[in-house]
Length: 357
Length: 207
Image 1 (cartoon, chains in turn cyan, red):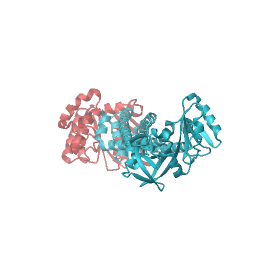
Image 2 (tube, chains in turn orange, red):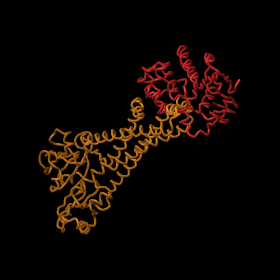
Image 3 (cartoon, chains in turn purple, orange):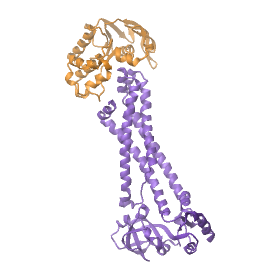
Image 4 (tube, chains in turn yellow, cyan):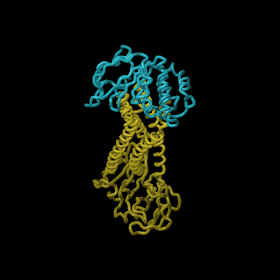
């Protein structure tokens, strides 16, 4: 009862703590979610339509990989292979857009991109992701000094694809001067995947063959993104939590006079700590819920912001949400209860005088 | 009632009270007088158990304050405080401020005391909604609610005009008539008219 009164009557202080906790928690959520989102989008792109990926040997990034597309015919002839396709992944300025993803693929992979309007591209044609298409009203676009006709618009759940361009692999080959960035192979029998990996490896000494799951796990770019994201999120997390603890500690210190009065009136240390515990709990839980809702709202809006072309996307996992919740409550309680405990041990009159100072 | 023997106190390296010994008998109205900085507020804080002396001993009803097992209950049940700046909790109403200090079996006294002090109609107001004189009467009501044996008041009229000061002194004198011991630290000499014992302090020593 006293806790609720203290929160409602000291509305400015309450608002200050509430805002600080909300902003700190949101920073933690958004930074970790966006980094996880980038990895998630690229992993999904690769995992969606293939069990096995074939890249050039010794290349750290698929952007630099060059695999002979002719290998597809030999792969298709292998037992238990149901389908395979080639893909070139690149990036280039498109019209007034400084950079966008370009996906050149064989025609058998076109159905992966759900047509919202128009038809799949022939040679000299492209289809645009819905996010990118919003920024063009013309029928032709320039990519790398070559003019392409827009034959349609597609939609995709993957942000990178929504903000990109899909074209015929031969056109992409000419643009990026390569045969294929990688080949993706699907099998009709999951138990034979390892055997197929071995057989494809025997077909050429210049390729590296992995299951898509292994590739995603071992891909250097993901490791870099994951490690950087871990460092940034950890820093944001630590800063956010330290911020929460500092604000709580400052607020408690500013209430020394009140604690001194209560001690002078015969209220026990436990009474003060208990009320502060409930105040902190009420405030940090409500700020956490507010921050969670705001973050979810922002994450839901991100893919629809035209300027970002769908490239910035966020995924907030339940485990992250629970971890942040527990840490927030812990740090808020730590920040408020430790100074309160120390203060409650001080002689009441000194507390009152410190509070007045 | 209260026996102070060889009480000294330091704030850091600075000594503010020097080996003070005296006795306050039950039912007395003690006036601790002295100029600003004479140590009267520090002595009052020590006598009221709100500050531990650096050395010396304080006995209340024959029992050493150091040995009181539940000092919180002691403060709540036996002692009442009135401070210069009232020190009411700003987020609690007048009634709630008094209820915060009241023992469970004394809560029934609240309305009666508020009525006696002429502030019953202020029950639901908050400290920032009433005048300085009214706040000090609320602080006095808070000090009286548990019918304590001793009331300590530090400059209780320091922020009041003479009319309100007279009211507060009158109320303290009434408490003495009911058998309560009252100890007031002040530099307001008007209180001599009400006091039954006076201790004059100068530079931390009894004159």
